[in-house]
Structure formats: C-alpha cells, structure tokens
Length: 249
Ligand code: PGA
Image (cartoon, rainbow, N blue to C red):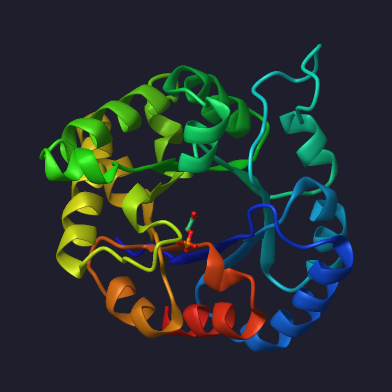
C-alpha cells in the first residue's frame, strides 16, 4: 500500500491576508517539485486569498475548524458549504487547542467528520494524549476513545478519506518532540484502530505526526513506517522552514 505523504501547516491565529500572500509567494517556488501533498491551514479570513494564490500549484488550502451544520443560528461559526464555496480542500477538526480552550468534544467531532466528508471536504482529525495521560500509561485508552468516537458515524467505505493527525499535547509548541519510537507506536496503534473497522481502510488511511516538527527532526519522523506526513505548527509560519520539512518528506 503506498500512501502519499501529506505535509500540512497549521498557522493557528497567525498571518493577516497581506502576510499570508507574502508567505505563499515565497513558498510556491520552493515546493514546486514536491512529491508529497502540501497543505496550508490559514485563519478563515485568509482562506479565499490563499485558494486564489495557490490555484494550479498543487498546494491545498484547509480551514482550521468547521461547524457541522449547513447553516443556522450559530454565531461566529462557519459551515462546510461555506468552505466548499471558497474551494477550500478540507478542515482540521479536534485540534487540542480547540478541545482545551474552546470546549470541542468527541461528540461534536462525531458530527463534524461526516459533515465534512458529505460536503466533499477532507477532515484532518487531531487526536493525542496529555503528559499526565502518557505518564499514567493511558495513551492508548485516550487514542482509542478519541478515534472510535470521532469516526463512529463515518461509513467504512469513507474511513480512508479521513486524515488523522496524532499530536501528543505535551509536544505541541513545546519543542519537546516525541521520540521516533513513541511516534511510531502511537501511530501504528491509531492505524490498528481503523483496521478494526476495515482492513482496507486501515491500510489506506493517512496518519500524520504533529508536535514540534522542525526541519532538523522531520526526516527521522517521516521515515517511520506508519507516519504518513506531518501537521506542523510553529515551523509552518516561515516559508523556508516549511519547505525544508516538505523536502524531508
Ligand atoms: P507545533 O504545533 O508544530 O508548533 O508544535 C503543531 C500543531 O499544533 O498542530
């Protein structure tokens, strides 16, 4: 089974449209020969501009969140059809910052993941344990719960269309990257959970690593047998360092 690696940059709440334009102009020539899939995830305000600027380049544009409903009285939210209208490729859902700071629940994700798929968008579903959970040897229990719950309403035939990002929370923005063994073990476990649902989907589903991925540690992580790419935060804000991670894939 060959799975095309995906390197996705999660900008979080960074970059105005002007800053995003400067970034994409610097990035495109640097990733023109990339053999992996490349994606950027700007704030909502820069999505339209980034889709226009990346058109024809092979770089895909994802949102960082989405509401599960098509429309409704949900002040401040954005729906899948609104992303489709912009020609956005997909959306991150369940990022640990959304879970911890904005109350995103596994139950909400159970609706968001199928809503994205139904709209023709690619979900990047984030899962991962806290430092306390890892120390208490609760990592697998946490991953099992998050993956099972979030994928509960996805048909087996669509499972492989979901991208899963394993992001240990203690590694996000801390410079404390998972060891290759920790990353491989957790990601193989996530794949096995999908395998329990469908053998074919488990083989085909892309599982990314995220958490302090930098140009100098990317090659080692991306060479691991079950790691199909990276979700990059801090190092994705600079075109040169993001392109170096793409090159490592
Ligand atoms: P980081 O963030 O690369 O800055 O650790 C990763 C993420 O939050 O997706």
